Length: 453
Image 1: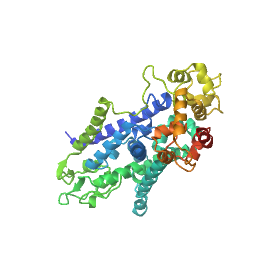
Image 2 (image 1 turned 90 degrees about the vertical axis):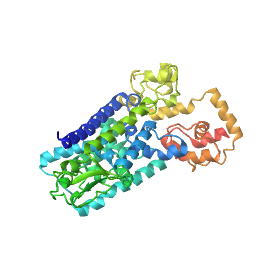
Image 3 (image 1 turned 60 degrees about the vertical axis):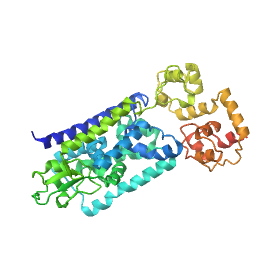
Image 4 (image 1 turned 30 degrees about the horizontal axis):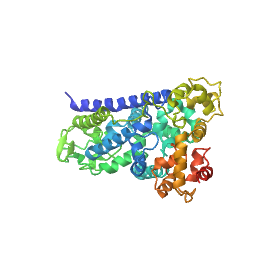
């Protein structure tokens, strides 16, 4: 049996299978909503890196990121330490998408193109700049800042292209970058991976400490350059003794393509591993860990479903709820939902909240929810807020302070501060007090502060 062919087809089966699965889940997410299918952000390990600051210093996740996403990040870091950028070469769905179009491009153009080295080398550093900017902005803003510009996110929203652009016009940038990625991949292998992917940059840095490397035996090498031709990231393997480049995605295509047995091998701590063994270990570790996390109830990648009899406040309902589901979730009548959220009576009860604007263009669900949430306070909560404000001197709270800074100055838990100042939960803690209104238009900081004095 030709084990190299088995390894080659096994890798393609896994990575393209993941692409098909992610595509299906993305479609379901757009059709059914976040409560029925996970978002692309929850399924991508990079979301956990973007959420790391809020998790460490505030004990919470950025919106759309869950514990399961953190498990994915931790798992892929372990894989990068052991087997370099194997996530990129063996598991990444967006990498698979580029490979699919790369193969189509080779059929069309009958050849592989390579960008000249004097242009290629500087461009390779661009992804590291994108990594720093993306993570830095996410940590500063407390949001998935990159989302509108992310071609992977754009891919997951293709089925709702018009609605996505209508909801956030800047998302057109993500779709443009997706088009550039696809066109680029038709001409150049793994175009986005080589020049723009911050995730690949992150794993590349970590992978530098990995003991796993492709090694070439110069005594056995026949210098046919089959390895160079097979490498999707254009590493000059034929001249290397050990492939130490951070660009290596450990796809093993070079080893599989080598016609001379023993001339090119993958070695881990001096032990030679067949490409099929590498693929089996990485895939087994990846899916095995996820299965264990699922079995122990830790692999959360969607909002928790409400238990029977459990309700939420009107300010906590999700856009994927129908009007009827909102009534059940909030424990109020349909009539009250229509009144609290200012929904025109002509809109049917089966309509999703985020889709009301399709029937009533002037309707803004987020603004309606913020308005309803700002006025919704139980007697018990009101009493607690009044008692708290009588005990705490809030005169030092300035509009220039972030929510986190203001809570710290009062020596309060962040969640208690949000309640005291009636701040909607979806407002990031890095937001300035005076800037809350830019996210929640009906919020008036000075008015709330005056009320609490």
